[in-house]
Image (cartoon, rainbow, N blue to C red):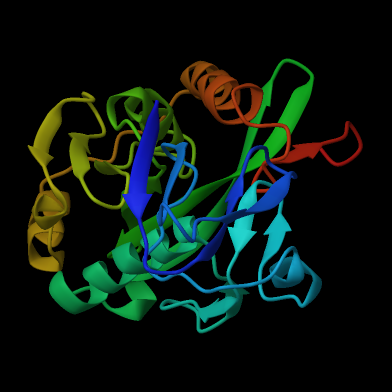
Length: 247
């Protein structure tokens, strides 16, 4: 599937592969057709040939286009500026600015160790929210479909803590499904439906935080591994496959 867009600039670059970058003269047509999902251009700058890479204006890391650096809204750390990271920062700011959470309530890029047989890996949970010393909500971001991300997000909610985390948010940055961790039921839709701090506090006050049995945790770990590790792009540097010694 392809999309065509028009621009006022006369030279633009596009990708025909993850490492094959070319420039395209569109002086006459002033339009370009590219595969859906590769890029969303909001501003176009003109760079002759491959100068945008040679001069360090743009770089590639894994399968992400690095646009520079940005400041993490939660930690204040400098992070590579990618389209995905901009969405994660949007979500963090939503929690703090619109939903009433304190910066200290939120942990970003949480490490989650998962295992399937003899295979181990470290994956990331994008955001975790703690209320009254218990992780009460996690947010898993990923571009594209929400439904296909429900199961691994629910599995992560049964592994990040020794108890079932009550609220699970699956989002692509533009839309969201809010799930009940215990049942997996979709209880709300849309970013605006992410529980605000008072709502989450009230929900957790009546929640028992049931312990996850060891056998259940093993199954959930295999599910996360299948989705997040086995199903990951080989160049995805957000996944850290562990050796036997590291595991």
